[in-house]
Image (cartoon, rainbow, N blue to C red; front, side, top):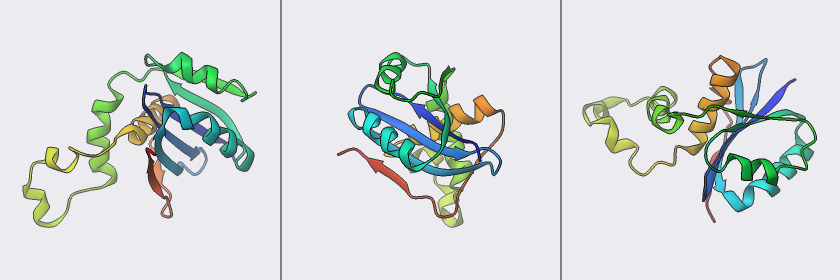
Length: 145
């Protein structure tokens, strides 16, 4: 089983996705403070057999790469242009609106949503050139503490 980690790096917070290629499934999708990233990936690497890490090539990408220096397998920078913008549309593919909520403009549903994990998913999907689905048991966490 080939597992990849995709990271949407940011100055204050990062989106992270752990996915399994052959199943086309996301097993973890979280948002965490940037200073927590190194420890989280270090622990995740102990538990999971991560083959590769894909990092969005935004302004803080090089700093994230330095934090992940302990990871001795392949780390790749990949284009993340418009990933946050595209995450808004992908959000509704993953979490469709139903019932009378359909009459309310979509923008109202994502005003307070952190889309960084979905941006990390988009980076991964672009890199792999395939769509992923969420594992039914996925715990979509936001760790901003």
